[in-house]
Length: 181
Image (tube, rainbow, N blue to C red; front, side, top):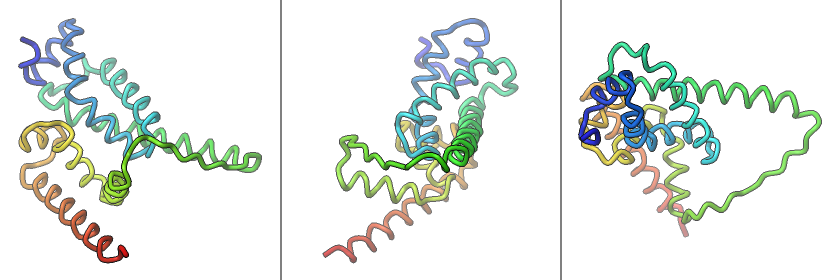
């Protein structure tokens, strides 16, 4: 029965001691949190590690969540802050070791087609909120209304972001096709 519960009901169940409810919250929101983390890292392994850390932090602080119905926007905010911390840490590490290290660029073969890679590059060039709207809507397999509530945007704002993101992607794809031999 928990699988049909709202996020608010699940949060209340977790705070009452039901750990299975948190597993359901994780299953529902992990793809979105990983997508947010991937936007910051550009690397699937780091994104997965950060997403795990985000869910651990959220679990530890769940009792402080004043509005259980806002779990989606709340955890996305945690993900954004954690990823910003990660970026700052990486920048410090790079500055610290830059003088004594030779950079090697490793290209990972992750099984993506060339078209997938092109689309990911185009999405990466969108504004952060536009990427978040796309991830929330397309990765969550939910209605637009549910995706909108999950990320905490207004109805009109969410639809404007989706429309703007799709328009930008379409224009860039058309430009790329015109340039192709």
